[in-house]
Length: 178
Image (cartoon, rainbow, N blue to C red; front, top):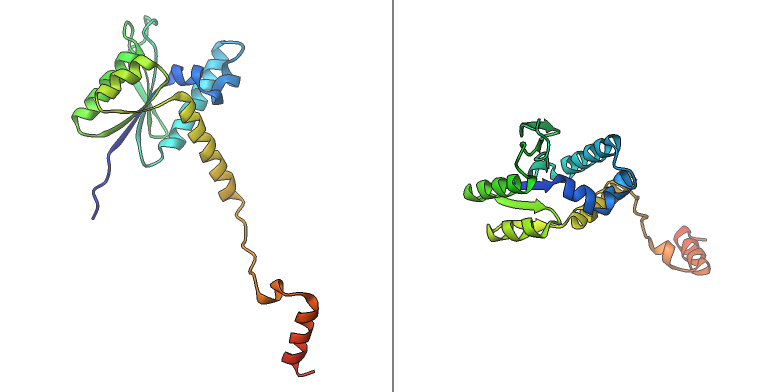
């Protein structure tokens, strides 16, 4: 029996919201609380779909400038969602989570377009995906889901479909003994 691959997905929340084309229409042009709440919810739902049963996923949002942020996490659809604690950036949390996962010899994928984080986690042996790459993957999943929802029935191709009408009439006459 093949060994199960243990995979961890870590998403840089605000970076993906600001860099990914899938979320631009959600947050632009106004950065109100409602727009960000909607965008965060959409991102978390997308991560739930992307992760499926393949990845153990965490979405990290930056709460470092919020004096009330404790770094507590919650679970949404099996995905861990957290804000970095006050005084600590999401970047540091992502680096720490990546390092811990690699120490446990897990396969890790970090989704961010932040070059500094990409360089840092690459040094740990972590795979990286840009925010836009993540958006393209989600679009492909959406397309696959739509195709699965409307399956096409294959038309059975017969000899009768491939020959002209006169020849078909002659063959039927021979078959029927006319």
